[in-house]
Image (tube, rainbow, N blue to C red; front, top):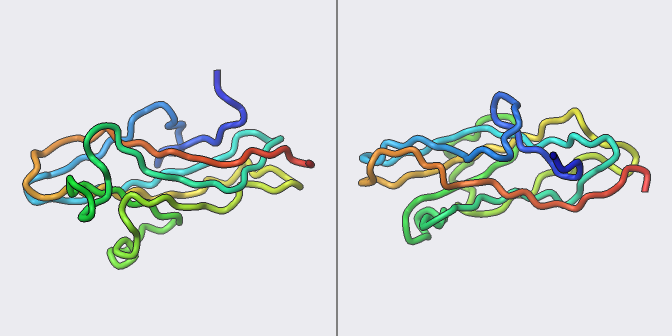
Amino acid sequence: MPDNNRLQLLNTAQEAFNSDPLRSFHNGHTGDSYEELFYVRNQNPSKFYTGVKVAPAWKGQYDGKGEFGNTGWGVKLMFGKRRPTEQEWDLVDSGSTIQIPDIGTKEAADTFTNHPIWVRIFCPGNEPAQIKDNMELRISYSVKEVGS
């Protein structure tokens, strides 16, 4: 049974994604990055959300801190519709949490906007080619009643 107080995570096709693993595909020999667009959306017309934060989380040994971690693997997040440039990605710290705008207000819920989040997973060189499925996005927020 879905939790009506929860924000929903949608994949690029704008289909519910909350229970599937995030999969990335890597040519480990040369090292590379994998980018994908996701969305956060409110499905409840009686709720609005403040303090919305999204953080990458690894299951297992990969710490996701990129060159400053102990594995070289990195995960970066960025809010926005347009695919970030290399220069924009360079300004983002690997493993950091991002904050997105409030979803709705006390006057009205926002159940029609898909809030875009870009995810970039970096694989260092000299790794085996692989599909990674041990990463997830964690969303935290405060839930409030519309009209309160």
